[in-house]
Image 1 (tube, rainbow, N blue to C red):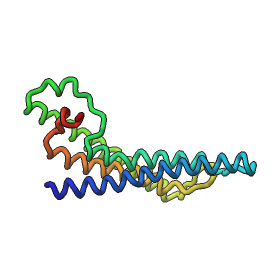
Image 2: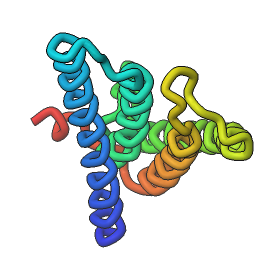
Image 3: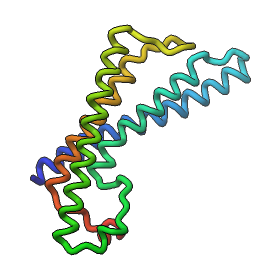
Image 4: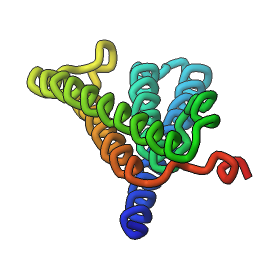
Length: 164
């Protein structure tokens, strides 16, 4: 199990690195657009659309790491007061709900991605191809669901240890 944990954490860290690269690309794109606008008086026409696509990619690429590292938001008002078995059951049920959400989102998102790819849809102003960006969403949620399923088999994280 520890080998799978390490592999999962390594893979999700790789996706997190891609997410950070998207953030850096947004910064570079905005700086370049400002320079082009004020120095050359010819702004890029694709800056806003590409920045938005990179922002959504950044969020979706970071999701599997948040799930693997137990960094997702949780409300523990009730579960903190449960006995150990109750905490374990609540943890497992919560992870199952997350897996179900990811499965539904990935399924529905894949249908949208297929439609986008079939029609070869482009962004409105800059005519950027939308297919790769739209495919990223269901794939990312599928990976997040697999991570959540694996994490469900593990014991709940110790909140006190996580805050140290």
